[in-house]
Structures are given as C-alpha cells and as structure tokens.
Length: 470
Image 1 (cartoon, rainbow, N blue to C red):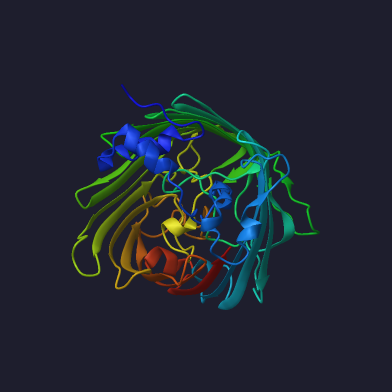
Image 2 (image 1 turned 90 degrees about the horizontal axis):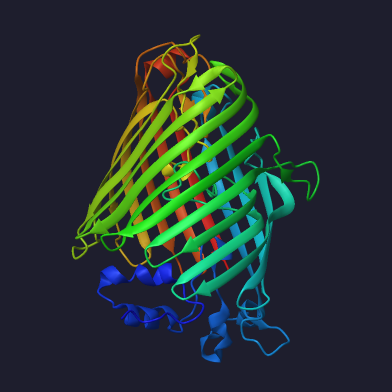
C-alpha cells in the first residue's frame, strides 16, 4: 500500500523522485527533509519556512528571510527579498541596420518582494520592479519601466491526501516548458506579467491547469501606471503527466484574442485558437524536448492556418572531463504563402522568450526554419560555456524575415530567396556563489541576400551581465 504523504507535501514533486529509484515512502522523507531553500529565478516559487530552524540561519539578514508573525504558528511568517540585474549591451545593427544605427547602453532591473504567509493555506505575494535603460538611443516597450507593481497575488493551497489544489488571483507571471511561446520574458529588462486567475490540481502523475488572463500593459509616464491590457486576452486549459518515470508529457488548448491586430496581410480583431503538445525528458545521458503547435481562428475576415515545431536534443558525457554536451536545436514556423487570399498563415509566437534563440533579438519565431548545433562544457564548478551556430531559412519567401518578438523586417516580404543567414553564438555563465552570478554572450549574424537587398547588413551583439539575488 502506498504511503500517505505528510500534509503540505506536493505530490507532484515527490512523484518526480520515483525514476531515481526512491520509493514513495522514502520520497516523502526526502521531500520533507530540512535543508536551506534555493533562490529561484521566479522569486514567488521560493519557500523559506525551513528557516524556522535556527540551525539553517547561517547568512547575514536571514532574520528577514523568515520573520515569524504573532499567533504561535510556524507557517505564519513574512519573507523579504530582492534581485538586482545589470547588463551592458552593444548592438551595432538594430534590426540588421534597418531600425537604427550602432548603439550601446546599460539596462538595470531592481526587484524587491514581500511574501506574506498567513497560514499553511493562504499567502499574499507582492513584488515591485524598477527597470531602467541608461544611454539607450531607441527605447522599446520592454526596455524601461520606472517603479511599478510587477506582481501582487493571493494564493490558496490545500493538500487532500496525495493531491494538491492551488489557486491564485491577481498580477502574476507564468512560463511553460522551454518558454518558446509562453514565457516570463526574463531576457529583456521588463518582464511579462499577467492579471490572471490561475487554478491547478496536482496528483502524483497528473497536473491540470486553468488560466484566464490579460497581459499587463506597461506604461512609463509615471510610477504605478501599469494596467491590464483590455485589448488582449489569453486563456488556457492544460494537462501534464509524468510518463516513463520523469518524462514530461503535456498538452493544452489556448485562446489568444486581440482587438485591431495588424499583420502584413491581415488586419482586424484576432481570435486565435491554439493547440499545443510537448514531450521532454532525459535518460542515459540523452535529453530531449519536442513541441508542436497548431493555430486556427481568424484575423478580421481571414482564417488563421498557422503552425510551429521546436526540438532540442542532446547527449552529455557526464563522467568525462568538463562534462561536454553536444546538442541540436531544430525549429520551424509557418509564414503567409499567398498574399491577398482568404487565409493568414503567419505564426504568432504569443509571449516568447528571446533567450530561446539568443539575447541579440535577431531571430523571431515566425516564418522560419532554424538548425542550431551546439557544444556546452563545464570547465569548473559553477562555469558553463556554450558555442553554437544557427542556420536560418524562411519557410516561404512571400512572407517577411522576422526579429524578436515578431517584428517583420521592412522590404523582405516577397523579396529574395529562402536563405536568411547564419549566426555564431558564444555564451558563458558563472555562479560566483548562491547570490551572485555573471554571464557574457556574443553573437555575430551574417545576413543573406534577402536581408542585404532590403538594406540590412551583418550584425554584432555583446552582452555582459551581473545578477545579485537575496
């Protein structure tokens, strides 16, 4: 008979330990073992209740990570934290030189948060964000947003036997899978938030999620002026299952709506139906992530018929020096093959993560074929270095070449051949300690004839980043 999990233990997390050869009883013990919490990219996912044990308060200011509140309840506490990220960037050809000259700047993002746990079921999470771009000649919507409310939600959690129910309401973020199409947009300076209602039900094998949301419309005229974007809505029903141990199988239906949407060959209200499936996992040194998406619906009077696929495959020699990994990334997304007809085939990448290709922003997930071999090594503890080459073609020459997030390069639609160009990328990440990390990324893009004939030219990007998290 399967051992019953302790109250408050997430059965989904315990199930992930099964492929490691841990029984359900031992998995429960491992999940509830007292250890110092990890700092996460999404700060709201952290749980600092373990610091009620004085032996784990080993760092300065730990008294602010777990502030027990009146009531003699160890699950009633306040936790404070902050994240500061600075990045120097240089881009000598924005939009391949079609949208601006050489530019260099510094972006800075400061976030502070308060996580208030009222008891084992209820909590309130709030995060403020101040994002600034210094000396940037051309400001985009994701570059700068002075002090504003990034996250503010109430959450309810209840464990029923081996199952867990969660619900959140308010301003929040969410990201799925490799964040190809739905991300928290961590690469740019201003992250993506949603005013949303979220609910999920988790069992040892299944997770069911429902979301109703409007993305936040960022404004930078004064402090605290961001608001829900009533012109755009995104809703989702999603199912996830663990198969064959720790392999993740997921599928979802989503609805993306936008008033007065504009594409090269369509204008009007957009109602886009989304069907997505993904399988990710690893075994014996191999790792894989496969995803496919179909899109239907309409934009104005035109029917949507779009699709995209993405895959990452790799093999790691775990016992070899530097633990080298060879990888291959393959991506494809539809473009509009016939202008002036009754259909729109340009794929909408929704809320993509620019990290997926590179920080340079040269490549958008629309109308493309993308092949990217890579090699990653770890010369020392905390250091990871990746070198890659990305080869790019258009899916159809009738549609444009797109940059991040889905911006068509002027003069490319219907002009030139399929070959877009290639880019070289090298990136190094180093964790100095659990609080401080750094990264350097360099990208060189060699343009093809279609971009060159449109007035574009070869492009170079450099980013140097430091991040402190407390």
